[in-house]
Image 1 (cartoon, each protein chain N blue to C red):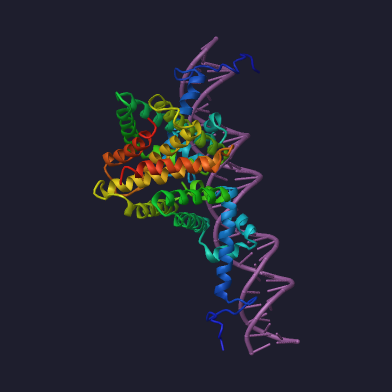
Image 2: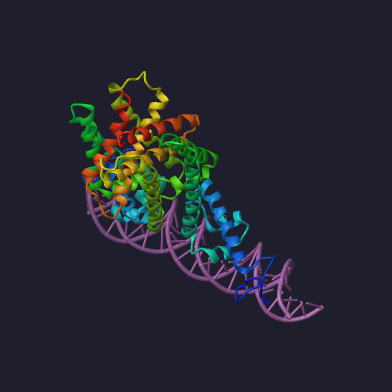
Length: 212
Length: 212
DNA sequence: GTGATCTGGCACGGTTCGGTGTCAGTTTGC
DNA sequence: GCAAACTGACACCGAACCGTGCCAGATCAC
């Protein structure tokens, strides 16, 4: 009994250590969650369906997650990270504020259009699940607002508006872009992406032009 | 005889005909749904809880609704009707566009603050439930966009922008106000209502000022 | 009053799902 | 080769919930 004393370490299997195997299984579960939550929805998803999509069994699910809500949080973090990354990548190319915003919006809408599962998880499935998930949603939305504030901060006249008012404005801009994207992907007849980018750009620049 | 307008089958009970009794029970169920969905959420709600809150039994639930999703649709319609009514009432007092928008926003935020159940059902619980509910959400959001378009139509230069662009702008404005309200009620430390009204007003007027 | 109808409370069967246990087969270290 | 550890498939149990049926008491028409 316990002659080897390898409780914590374990041994290699298929050329990978225990820690690496666990992480690979966890990653497969998160990918499967994005697929299932993003196509069939969170409410109709079950642990068994997730495991079947991941090619694993329930035993490995509970190895990495306490329950389906924990997995939803992980899937939500995965897709919002992807969104945040694409926005920053799109904004990098611009030389001035106008170009940066147009690039960020274009990259954002392209990502949303490219993978409908992302928008479904980020905009629909995550709401109304439970207190913890709601907190994550509010916190994530707040982080996008913070990102907007950081980008526009050096370009505006900070003496013209209070911090609180500025934050409310940034929240409104995020909301404008989000609802435009949401209605865009939900509508049956997809209007061209240039159209939604132009609309979002008009709103953002109209508000920012009052702050310079 | 039969001067009370009864159905072919059925009789009066407690001074009301069968049809009237059914409608009263249905209204009680919708009110109970607003209470339960708006406080504990749709996901944790059950038919039994709804019936207990309404002071009725399941038998009367299935008399008026096919399932919990149908009840959610009815509760959603109830709260969005209340919101729409409050917005129109607030806009009526203004003499010009600026005053109308300020009045509409003030009335909207007051209603949201007055009854948190409304915003919870309208902004959170309704998303990601199922295809029918999603359709209702998209349709309702579209109706708010239509309302915005009707209000601003006589005030703007229609030759400056295309219909499609105008609709995208209106969608963005609705999204801005919605997310400001959502983050407002979700935040622990409630900032004063005048602050959120001012922020929303700034955004709406900044966009509209480019269209005159 | 009397019988028919309406009401509300209870409970039952059926289903689904979460979480755990078991066990045979496979892979690795020695 | 062999024992120990890892893997995957399946079975099981309990809980929750939906939808329906039943029944005793209240209420109304006659």
